[in-house]
Amino acid sequence: MIFVTVGTQLPFDRLVRTVDDWAGATPGIRGVAQTGPSAYAPANLETFAFLAPQKFDLYFQQADLIVAHAGMGTILTALQLKKRLIVMPRSAALQEHRSDHQFDTVRHLPHRLGIQVAENEHELLHLLEMPSTATPAVPDPLPEASPDLLNTIRHFIDGRKPVPRFTVERPELPLTVSS
Amino acid sequence: MRKLFRSRRRRVLAVASRGGHWVQLLRLLPAFDNCNVVYVSTDEGYRDQVDGAPFRTLPDASRWNKLAMMRLALCVAWLVIRYRPMVVISTGAAPGFFAVVFGKVLGARTIWLDSIANAEKMSLSGEKAKPFADLWMTQWPQVAARSGASYSGAIL
Image 1: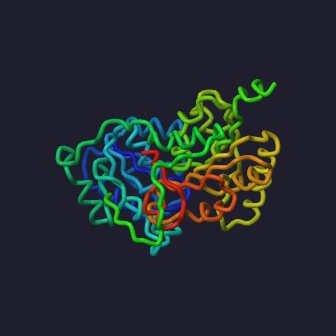
Image 2 (image 1 turned 90 degrees about the vertical axis):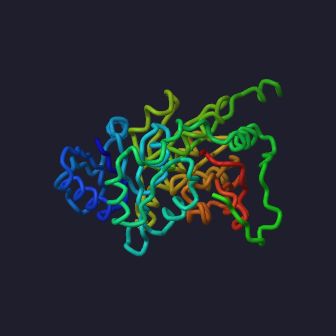
Image 3 (image 1 turned 30 degrees about the vertical axis):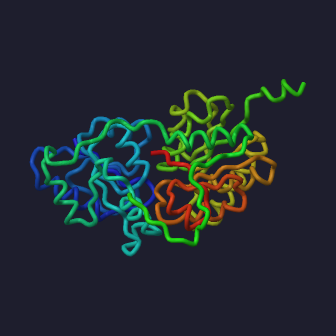
């Protein structure tokens, strides 16, 4: 089963339509979709505008593949449940979000997480048609959040001075980042 | 007496709107081990995810709907007045912003952890929360370098 989710806040017809067309042209595919306020009505997917969290989790757990917008909720849930994940970022130019931050997100997420990124509908179709044996390995379930982050928050709550490991002394300098 | 006061568990108000903000807040749970936490979000369905801890819901509001935003602000203000948290922590977005503002005004210490989705710059709600956050954090070193936010790792 394939589970499609574009969150609940904004429409993302471009993604829903592409997956729907592909599902229609591919025999034996069962697709379930949470489409939020998308206007496009899929013909080949079981569609819900909004799933309650329990239902959402159920479909997520049953799915062999998740196809989604590049929202962090979906990305983290897929990592926690060890699901193969294809994401397509929302474009601000196409009024799919208020900013292009989903492109920023996918550009910086480490490759080791095994998330497949489609920049547009053509790449999405290509990834959908890729056999699951040719896809990157899904990593082990996520460990806890970074110990430094948890410690900083613990210390702060206890009223001790937070001691971030990383402090930027000269913010005016450009920083090279390896993602 | 002083010892008794010090041993009290800290009251924490943890606030995040639906979706990615909430999933990220849940990743911080291990940091709240010795605290009395009240969780706040915009979806009643999340109640099961906090192991029986107190959970409150808020109406959702997009930043373009002024009336809904005012209603949200009033609801958050009421929660903060009612619980008088020692610490307010939020991962965003609008409900968390208001919680940090009212928390700060009413004497709590406040943490803003910007969403990991914002890998190039702080979110708009994060920028607005800056003057009210005692600990203003990003989850990306490059954003820390540009914005002056502190960075000590991420929820991933």
